Amino acid sequence: MVWQVIFCVLAAAGILLFLWCLAGTFLLPVAGDGMVIRYRASGGAPALEQTVRSFLWLRETGLIDMPLQIIDDGLDQEARGVAVRLAQKYPCIQLLPAAEEEKTDSGR
Image (cartoon, rainbow, N blue to C red; front, side, top):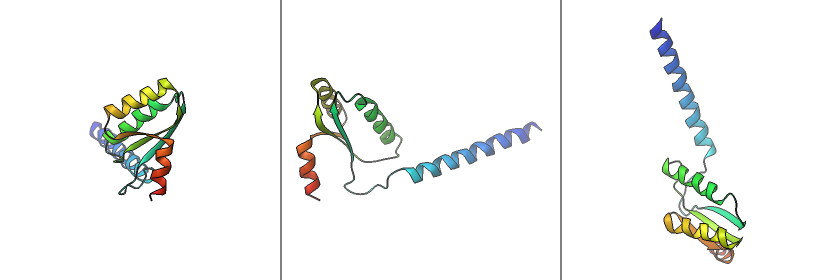
């Protein structure tokens, strides 16, 4: 009886893990050469650090392998300082002014 319960729990956990991986596969972007994630930030950018932490978690778990470009669309002094520190600390993060993004887009 105990072994049946243990087997059922393990089987249910295996099915849930399979469904979790399947959902992750459908929800993640398709990786390709030259693909980047862009985050347009302006003002105080209250969600900047949380967004970068989420991005870094996705990279660390191996779910994505793309760089993050933070587009400075009028950041205030404090938020720009945070963005600069993040870009210096993590090589996969770039801080670009909005004018630089327009040059990048026109180069496609």
